[in-house]
Length: 144
Image 1: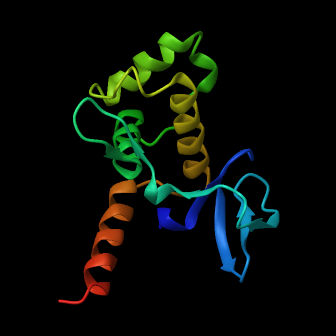
Image 2 (image 1 turned 90 degrees about the vertical axis):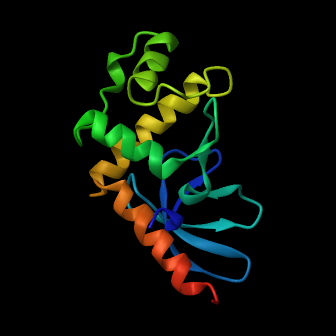
């Protein structure tokens, strides 16, 4: 499911993939429900393709979101509670202690929390189930 949730560079929030055309895709904003085209020149990234740096291997975003969900007990993150960048890093370390403090910037952490809150508002509340569905679909699509 996260494969159909997109981030558009330079645009706030997240977008649902509605349909694909020849030179563009139609997306719907998860913030206000407006539909618009995203052209091939726009930088579009699927949430399913994003991972986060750790001190070992990179962790897929779906795993990071699930760790955050469990830590937050499926409650939104209060973004006003962070006085500075170190507070953001401390919050991140509370549920993912192995994140790479050098390569994961405070702006990345803040965006993660914003996306998490937006996904919760849209009814996403079990990210591991989404990961399992994606894995099962990949296994049934691959020739054996």
